[in-house]
Image 1 (cartoon, rainbow, N blue to C red):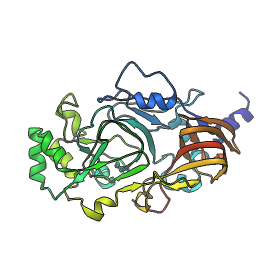
Image 2: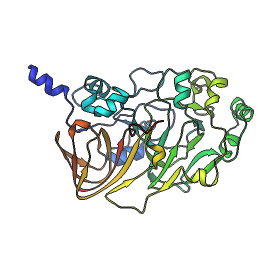
Image 3: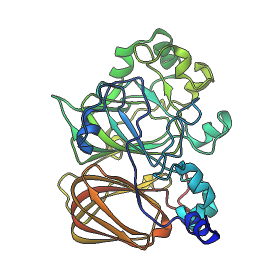
Length: 352
């Protein structure tokens, strides 16, 4: 390779379509991901998560979960070699070579267990990590008689009660204590760190989250091999300190959920400003040409087809396309007739 070729390779400019990246999980699902991508349903029923443009590994499993680019490099390594090109100067100044974002397709083939995620401060104190795991769900499909998610305790709960539920694995009590929220395609749910939650069967989402795999699983029996897999190696007495024990009702609960199914603007913001310190997402409705500002981003095409044109080149888009776009690709245009979710990292300076 000539020096010129090496310089060209080191500068990220080209939007790249990524293949599926489905590390095996403990719960069932995956049919909706296969259908979105137009692929045969996998024989194994434990591929319910597609980690898109991932620079994050599964907890305790070195390398598993990382996205590989078509040239064989890990995306993590490509970003480390050129953080400014991939992420932009402002983001690189704040986060270095850290994308500060993980995007997943998640297809719940069964109800997920009641669990929660640590905050930034908890992760820094106990897990030696800058990021906790605040997340948001963009519902893109909902099937079955009663698609439901469960978020936050309905009333204040004391720590001793939660410890008893976990020690006795009282699943009915844990699930019954949560707010049951019916959902349909077009709904979004913001899930701040600490909030206990679960996702019901038949709910298909694009999930945006901080780039960690930190989960404290309150309801481990029937899901995990043993309780040691549920507390991040901290022991439950410490791990449960991250649980939000407050009741979420009325306007406070409503602030977590948005309904956007009836909106078809060219760009539909999916989250309120409370998500800005963690991530951003818009639903794009391209009918002809739609301009996009320069940004590291992940596109998930939900329907239709078209083309993404940028300084880095031109890329065909179709239903099921998952694309990573470097900041250095510059301002981009989507041409065609399609609907997509555009995911981006935090707003610099928003705080978290």
